Amino acid sequence: MTPEDIFHAVAQWSGCTIAPPLRAMLSRTDGAFIGDLVRFYAPDELLERNETYETRAYCPGWLTIGDDSGGSAVVVAPDKWPTPVYLVGHGSMSRADFVEVAEDLDEWVRSGCKL
Image (tube, rainbow, N blue to C red; front, side, top):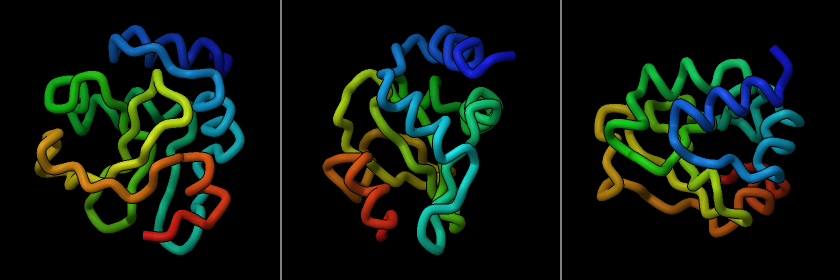
């Protein structure tokens, strides 16, 4: 599957459009750690990770794009750019439990994903 096929499958599954800059950022990071703790999922991991964490059921309209290596998901609104970044515990994937860590995903990545 090409990256575009993967993003199309994730968009179909989630019911959300994935902004082109978000697709580009996820392709560029491709499963890498940014900073000491934050790992972004590679495009080919996105669907499986979001299915596993039941993001669509508990956080409709949001997409899990990584984690903090400590039990929290990195969640964004995939159709918005720039998009704020939130952490939410994998065991409490509810919008009410989101904690904003940055106003802009791209800026957060450039600054080393400080938590």
